[in-house]
Image 1 (cartoon, rainbow, N blue to C red):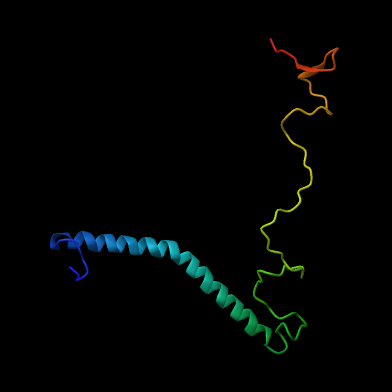
Image 2: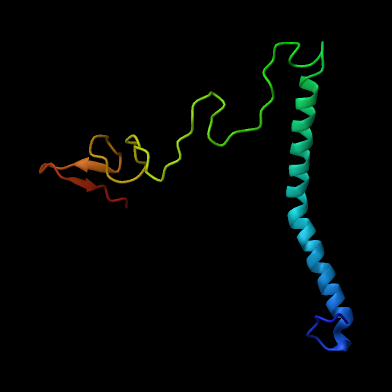
Length: 121
């Protein structure tokens, strides 16, 4: 049993397996993200290096230098605006509720001009 264990000596095997289980769960959770980060760094480095190769690289063919993605600039070149204010929403047609401008087969006009629901019997 380790010096920092609070469990009795008889639980040392259980503590070892619990430790292994949590290490495995940590690797399962963090491993894919770490692999994607390493892949992204290798891809960016490889593209930057091959851009500089004479005759076949991107610079020789007149292509732009590879850049890392930006959080503040869109691919079109316009800057992104980060704000907590709501955007003005255009008036969208609702799918529910009573629409007086469109006829509904369930509704009919009465003599008083009011709409009543046709009773389905």
